[in-house]
Amino acid sequence: MIPRSRPVINEADIAALAGVPLATWRHRDAPAFRAHVPSLLPGSRFLLYDRAQAEAHLAGEPIPDLPTGEHPTDLLTAKETADILGITPSTVQAYATQGHLSPGTTLYGARLWTRREVLDRLHNAPGRGAGGGRRAGEPQGPRKAHAYEGDPRLSVAREALAAAGGAPKGRLAAELAALHGSTPRTWERLLTTAATHPEDGVLAD
Image 1 (cartoon, rainbow, N blue to C red):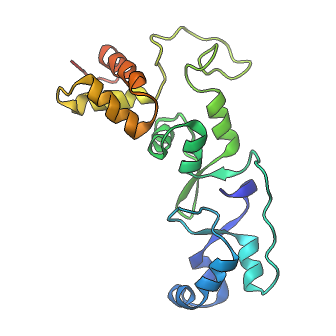
Image 2: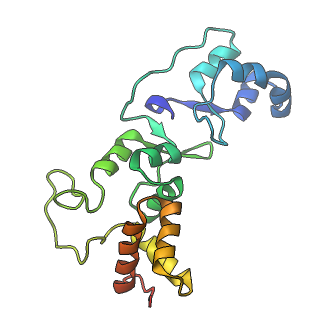
Image 3: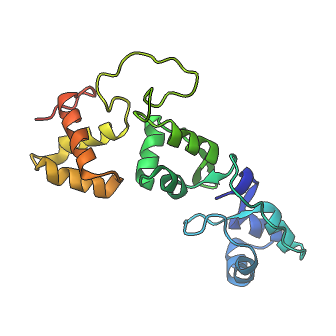
């Protein structure tokens, strides 16, 4: 997480600020730097650091503390977003591709979403509560053709049916649940809906 959308920096730019080649910096300076300035995205392949903390370390000054507590402008990784929404990181990426989340913000290759957007998605998910995911104050709109209309998982179910080759629905539902979260029973309903409403042009038996 990047708290409060603070400016960040990666190791290549840190080495440039230090005036040494990246390979030299990683071999000579990185261990001490990483011991004092933690990566903002632990567990990620993207090593990003708070810019103010990195510059303080390079200047030999005390490392400033980061803001604490949750804030709407925090930038979250796909995994952090997935943990809040109760889905998998790959489903987060699918949501962003299909328009159910914004493309997010990309910093040094890391794709991130604001906590505000993620919480809005959590509380206004398709089919949740009266109004099926409407924001407060929005009109009711036309009645849905089926319960899962607008649910991005339906596209996943259609693709799975197209590639299933006649596999039993129960087994396919269990595999989708393991890959994308939710229960096998939910995925069975999604598969049934996908088979009877092939709106995307994917026909299923």
